[in-house]
Structures are given as structure tokens and as C-alpha cells.
Length: 428
Ligand SMILES: [Zn+2]
Image 1 (cartoon, rainbow, N blue to C red):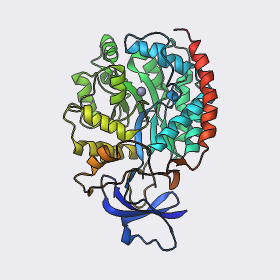
Image 2 (cartoon, rainbow, N blue to C red):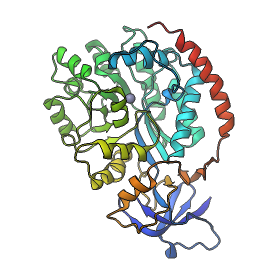
Image 3 (cartoon, helix red, strand yellow):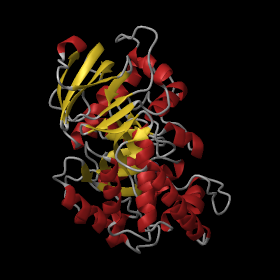
Image 4 (cartoon, protein in one colour):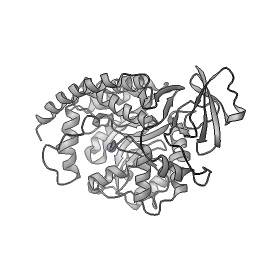
């Protein structure tokens, strides 16, 4: 299919056309420029009437498996962060089966697409359904038409039970998908404090040197404390000791770190992901952007709305600035996602046609100095006008084009009820 999305304000952190058009051919961008230079003769032209067109958004830390959880309450009242895990998240993931993993993923992917997200770095757990779980997530992502970087978050919380299976699930999925252009696997670790030294030794010996990790790192003070008790200077120092740190590593949260951790981050330059709404919700403290300046913002599944999350971060982080928000949303995000999925993240010829047309028509002139302000205070939140992935329009004017939304919701309600019954029976 060859068509034009035009008469919009095009911005990708690099190029800017106040009245531009994009010519899409199959899955790629063929041409981009001012409207008058992109010929529309004989080609379908979708007029977006002055709306903002940006690259499809990336959510760099997400948990599809939590999508059926809103409305459930912890099985006991938690007094701290570890109890939130023990009384809520761990019983929830233990209650997941094949169909609930599938429908959780579909719901999470649907919500993401509504907000213009076309790529997700997911961190999965389902302790009673480990083998094959990542393939189920992959199938649901494929149906929705989004790109995904998947992993199983290995933990030793069941005292060595299923550890081999968790490692194998990561390894198999990584090997089976290493040549895929839209879905890849890396090594998932839950957190330092749920992995002992034997586990880390085993993981390191089972896994090839160059596979990046995705881990909750220094989310709560207990993670830093655990690593200090183990004789390390902090969670990043411990990962470095086991040779698990690389420029592709995804370190989620990074709220509680030592000076040594921070200097290792500056040395290795991993992908640090702050999740501000989640941190506020769990009361674990705040990420400090004055200490770690290169990072991304994720939702940690608090929502799938990346623009709203960036806005929340802008409003709550010390000394945040609009140019810095522009770096987070565009240039830094783009350099990170290209590590995993080349030719994505920019609106240039030869790149994948992944884009979001935000449902906002600016009434003040948009220029390079105020485009981020328009994004955070004008477009702010709400579903897109169009979401395009791999050249396919997957969401248009509040409707999915490739799935039956009502059918999925009605099935997900039944699956959610069964999940709830299993969750309520969990012993904590
Ligand atoms: Zn998380």
C-alpha cells in the first residue's frame, strides 16, 4: 500500500515541517517534506488537518501481565514495598495461565496503541506458566501490530524452584527471535534482592556474554540494602561484579543508588528508565535527573499513556526543562530503540513507517522552540487520531482497524474473572 499522511506538523526531534506530508510505501517511509513537495497525484491522501505527527512512541518499561489487575486489591494490607510484591504482584503473576497472559497482553497493547505507542520493552512474570509464556506475548503483539522487546523476569523467590525453566525461557526466546525485525528477546532479571549469588553465577554461565539484561534496579531502598549486605556498594556494582552490565542493559527505576553505582552507570551508559508515576504510587522515593542525566521515562504499567507520563515527570522532577523533555521523548529515545530495532524512531526516508498523529490541532503557531510545550500542554493526553505501525494504520479516529475490540473485551472479562478467583485463593 502506498499513501500519504499530510497537512500535519511533522516533528521527530530532528526534522520539522510546519505543514508537511509523509509518503508511505508498504512498511517504510518513502518521502517526507513540505506538503507541496510530496506529490499526491493518484495516491490516497489522508488529511490530518494540522495535527502533530511524531514517531510512534516507545514505552521502555512495561508489564503486559498487569493489564487485568485494576480492581483487584492486595491479599493483605502491605506496609512496605516488599509486602506490595508479596501480597499483590507475586500472587497475581502466579495466577496467570495461557489465556490470561494472552488477554493481558492484548489489553496492554490495545491501550498502548490508543496512545500512539508502537514499541514496548516488556518485563514478564508468570510463575505457574513459564515455558512458552514469551511466545504467547509475542502472538498478541503480532495481532496488534506492535514491536516488542521481551524477557522473563527471573527471580529466586520460590527458593530455586523453576530457576532453570526461567533461564531457559529467556534463552530459547532470545535465540528463536534474534533475527526478527519486530520482536526480540533479552535476559530478564526481577531484581538484585530476589537473586542470590548462586543464581547470578548460574545465569551468567548459561547466557552468552553479549545479551543485555532488563532489571528493576534500586527501585526501593531494600534493593540497595540487600546488595550492601552481600558485600557490594549497590545494585549496579553487584551486576557489574557478575559481568551483567553492558550499554544495552535496561535498568528500571534507579532511585536508590550509591556513588559507585552512579559512576558505573556513567561508565557503561546503560538504558536507565525512570518510572515516576509508579514510584509515587509505591512511595519508594524519586529518581534524581540531576545525578543521572541520560535516561528515559516509562510507565511501569501505571498506564500506557507516554505523553501523560512525560508530563507528570516534567511537573514533578527537580529542575526539569522543556529542552530536556525533548531529548527524552525524541533524540535519546531514538538512539536507544535503534540499538534493538534499527531504522525505527525517525520520520525519514528508509525508516519504518511507525508514527502517531496526535489528536490535537494547535491554535498557536508551532515552531522548534515551542513544539515540546505544544506536546505536553496541548496534546497532553487522550487517544491518537491515527497510529501507524510498519506502514499499516492500526488505529484510526478512535477505532482499531485490525482487531474486534468488543470481542476482545468481552472475552477478557471472562478471563479476568477466572484470574481473580485463582488470585483470591493464593496463600500469602
Ligand atoms: Zn516494573
